[in-house]
Length: 356
Ligand SMILES: C[S@@+](CC[C@H](N)C(=O)[O-])C[C@H]1O[C@@H](n2cnc3c(N)ncnc32)[C@H](O)[C@@H]1O
Image 1: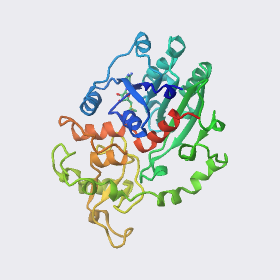
Image 2: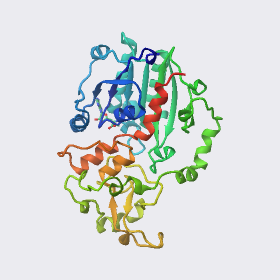
Image 3: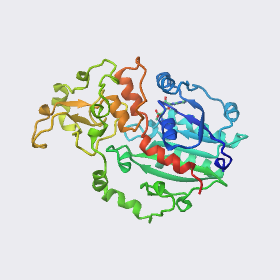
């Protein structure tokens, strides 16, 4: 509707972190003006400011919200209340309260948003916070379409399944309204606006996991040496040695390590604890290709961590993205681990912003 008048959509970015949503909106090529961003984390705000020349706000009041005259809200609230590793306290977790408060403000606003986009971990969709969100959106005349998608469904050899809610306030509507009120696990409706998929296609996903992985680019396309000759660009201490996995860790945790090779077409989700802990925090890269993979001892693979730039590449962040110098290696991994896949969010935003 707004696009017809060629007015840019006025966008607010809540929980902006290092700017994954903003990069996604840029990549999506939507006619959007980022009006303000909000985050309480000083360090994340340093990174955001470094890249976008704008420092997010740390506080927000209900009165402010109307002042921005924003019509789109992008939100990626903290996911710890819903993660499997967490205590799953859901809305009882203090970290969930700011999200619920923001949603509760919607009916009090003179100018409520007309589109909303929410990102969270898988598990959110069964939480009571999700129930409250859907209820508030319904009461405020929004129609929703929900997705669980992962970068490997977009050609990136990376598993990071995430939950997304796309919401439009009536009279706005989605290009494929037959999916209103549904949770989809396939990306087809985003690529082909008029293509409809049979609902049981949704279930087909698990059985074709291996097939989909075969269509992904190999890991080597995301490594620093393939993308830039300057290996120091993203390394605060400037040496590749800091990325090698010590023998003591291999001895202790070897069986729990997820190891990938440059020609692999998959790797595991990098969490904010990558580099601090080994188990379940992300894949390690074998830099020596053995003749027989399963029979070679881990010590001979010369294992290393992915660098922060490589994690950023797997998150499909643009080449221009960089960390300010003062951000330590561990902090870089933590910030990236909290962020999102631009390869997934950009097509979702493009779909959200398109008119039927
Ligand atoms: C899941 S991360 C979102 C990351 C972001 N999408 C990105 O691309 O980096 C959640 C963010 O919410 C911020 N946050 C947590 N509680 C907050 C609150 N009450 N107010 C504002 N920001 C908050 C955290 O500092 C963190 O950066």
